[in-house]
Length: 178
Length: 127
Image (cartoon, rainbow over all chains, first blue to last red):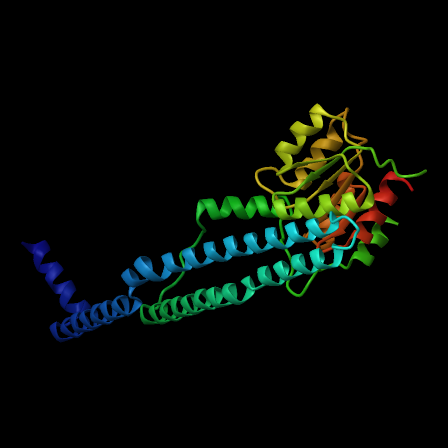
């Protein structure tokens, strides 16, 4: 009994009933804001429509690029293999028109990439708004698979292509091998 | 010393388009005996089965990279003298230096042209 009384006394010292009510109201407001923020994220729409669309569009881009490259290379190889003779020019022109046709892929892939960029922009906006609303902080440490990939990339110097062209010009590389 | 156009060449790249481009450039230079592999592991298997006069390899491949392939080749008693040219989009100086330390004979940055490929092959295989 004496212990319970002491606990009650401690509570009253920590926060008065009015302060507790205010805290509860704050918590309720925070939860209401959180629910709004989650709703605005529209996670279902993202996972059911937007992100699958991004995968599909990028797959189409890869397929169209590969198809166009094959067509262009196939026609170029065919030109190299054409025999000399009276029909040479006409045959070359036919192959060149096929190459022009194959190059049309860029228009379509450009539109597909624009759709992907728009979806990514919307996702970025929603995540930024959500992050600000819930005052999100990143947890320490990184995903194990991501860490493994990072370690491998560092060990094997997998830097990938650099923005704006090669980081080291061919001439500079040649100088290292001179 | 003239280039031996009959020497077998192994092209290692995970992008078939790039393999096709290099094959065509090599054909243009007069090389007809060209094999290919899609990563370092497949390339090593080919190298164990046939003596190649030159390896032309990309860097960034899965599961075994061109850099790992180079180190395996240089560590193997039977393969260590095989001329090796790296053809890659990895253009940082640290990549070039690491490849040189590992024993690469020459290094070409993508995109490249037939003249560059030819000059490096000549430099490595002797012209």
